[in-house]
Amino acid sequence: MSRDFSRSLRIADQIQREIADLIQNEIKDPRVKHITITAVEVTRDYSHAKIFYTTLVQRDENFLIEKGLEHAKGFLRSNLSHRMKLRVVPQLHFVYDESVERGFRLSKLIDEAIAQEKDIHQTDSDN
Image 1: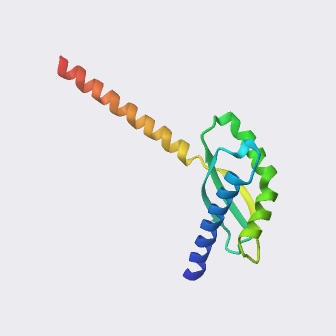
Image 2: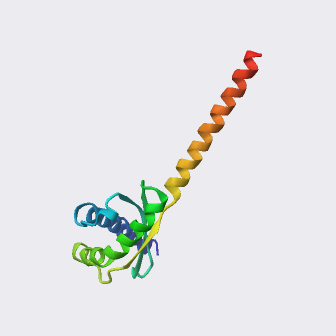
Image 3: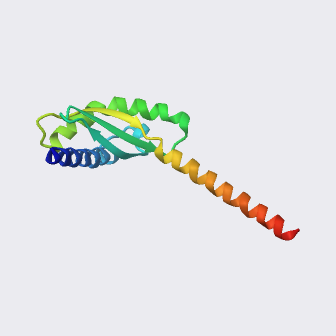
């Protein structure tokens, strides 16, 4: 069983590398040029792959990126089948990964709390 699990991880990692390369070098659609593939999860039977991505564009532009990825899904799957020797090429499902955005917000909140704490200590020491 652990052997199957490690194979799933290897396939997910390979899919992540190949999809990232295809998006960067093969796709001409400007809607999907500025995304980063953060993770890939593959089902046990390799029939579906959930591809997590993030982007630095504004939240309202994410709709365009989703449409671009949906449009490119067939092209990506076809090229993935040529690049990887799998019996079953998984169906691709793109999911926006909010963890980077959430991490940025938490980091900003921490920085603000530290700044407020310094201000409080500064005013206390001045009095």
